[in-house]
Image (tube, rainbow, N blue to C red):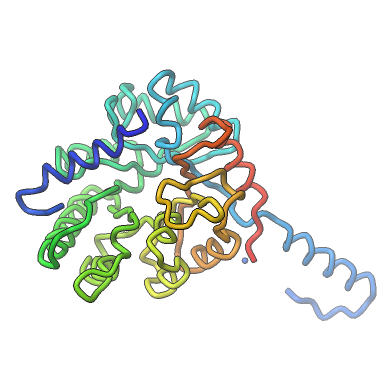
Length: 303
């Protein structure tokens, strides 16, 4: 199952080959008043900075196909309130149908806020199903490196078209990055081109922080430069001293990425959804790592 999504992504790009390569200061002066104010400040400073967070189910790609309801129930017990799905062999709703799936998530105190899907097949049907259960986003997870800037322009046109379809049904469309779009190409950075050539009214972006860092870019620079364009993010850590290794994700809080700083900038610039994702599990299991991720975000205080 480890390569299911990558296989799906590769197939998606192939299908598109015809058109794409693909947080009242009072005036009182008494000591007691001052003491109360100071205590409040300290308490606020130590309060966790993220109220609700989610998880990308691809993190549990080896477990979900076996017993999706059991896995979802465990994720709820860890503290996850939001679910981001992906389109696998059992579809976006794990064979339950969109309304039955929503009911089960409701029963667990969770909501499906987004999903990664194949935008090249039956996209409007997926949009309709997502809208019926109150999802916020459908996300394109991958298009792959393109060979020319004309091909990147076609990608942008496709994203704008997908955004138009989503907007018609009352939901939103977003693109999820990988490292390839941050690599210089014919004198420019493809991701900058995508940001500049997609309509902000139609296309939002999901920043995979791990892949931005892996691509040699600075997440904070992009969050500030394109304020209010990144509405979702993948909170995925990267092994310390990983060098240029690509498959180097690790348990959240044990790696090299400064999430207390990055996520504050993200929140200040319009980030709405903070979604845990992990693809590698050294001396752990996917569910154990998912619990580590939830425990980390429950305690995280921005700096």
